Length: 198
Image (tube, rainbow, N blue to C red; front, side):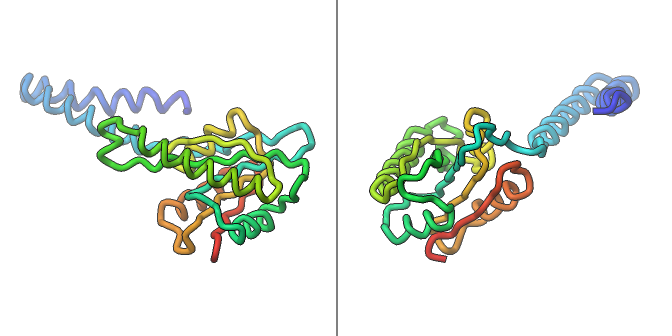
């Protein structure tokens, strides 16, 4: 942030509050302060850093991060994924499968994320087992419910040169399509969105 912006932001927050105190008294000042806090929190909550995501690996090996929106169990789906991601059975690619936990609105507010994490874990077990049956070894991780945040978290410790977002449903949800668009624009690694069966 530029040095001149901070005094402007502080002034924009404090001047209406001080002015309300001076002109209309303490009740108006408190109302202006509360409104200022609400506006500030709303703006802060909507802001999201939009810089590039991830670092590329430096060991010369192929590191793939597979982000799955559901379980991949069918042999045909596994073959389609293998071809789309360019994976060879028994190859030297390092593969990590990531399943974001799908948390419901009420569960999030109640901090009851256990069921969502269990479901993501089941998706991972099914997917990793199907990949292993096809000759591809992979690690597995459960991630944040936000696909972009889950990928960003994983790339902190697992530098990948390719990220593949896999949708199981041919009619990909708006959430998955939005995540795919953002990942495509922000990832340093190569990105692909594969819709199985589509």
